[in-house]
Length: 151
Length: 151
DNA sequence: GCTGAAAGCGGTCTTGT
DNA sequence: ACAAGACCGCTTTCAGC
Image 1 (spheres, each protein chain N blue to C red):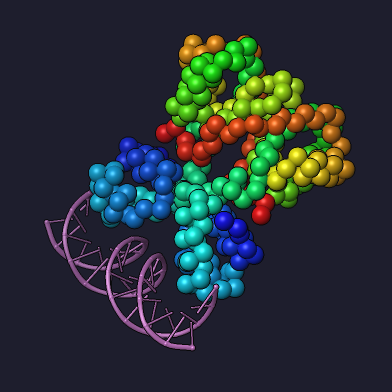
Image 2 (cartoon, rainbow over the protein chains, first blue to last red):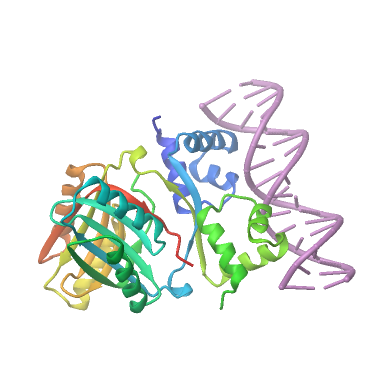
């Protein structure tokens, strides 16, 4: 499926604030309800538009520590990797995980209530799967955090 | 403001899928419409619940490159920092930016269409503000990416 | 703080152009 | 493919418990 200029505008609105009514979105993109609704439905079906969620405020809920974790490993067998990925997906503290190209093999973003909670997470992880080297970077300030793509 | 067990359950549902009707949420948390609605309103007012957004699929929209950028700087004056933060906030390719404690000063997550687009971004950034050292980590695979806090 | 019901807005679908 | 309109269901409010 391919996106045109109107679809692009709709997406820009929805990824900024999906809580408004169809009428408002339609006005914002210079169209009316029906076409906008049809386009949204199509993009949903195509999987271009994923889930609709609320973004909770981590600070206000007591999640005051955020770490980026750089992981090097010596093990590169398929079996080890399966176990490792499973562990990451199952741990709710892991907000984000990527497999990388180059020196460092994986990067994680981990949100926890405090430094002690991070240590608990860390100990649990390395006891589940063997990793060669782990570096944790502590965030002092979240400057920006968005899911909005630069359409 | 403090959150109780019912609020916690509601948040868990909303950060998973906010597209459902109040009835469905109420049933999922074992309550009924009105109390759930009142709790949601309160959490909105308190800022615990932030914006409601749709999550677009980056791959399907042609954003096939994702970099984590580690930045060291020699400049630590307030004025330099103000300019740097402003640049980050204004660049839409920057999905996430944190100021760090330790060796590395900043980490960015940058999404672009391809490696060439990353270079354009990189050149633009270093021409705007002076940085001492930049390392880019290329993501090969997004294993996990969520905003759902481990309540 | 919860339940139940009433009112009005908004999402959804149909028709017309 | 878009605009207008009707319908129905949901959000939102309010009274009573």
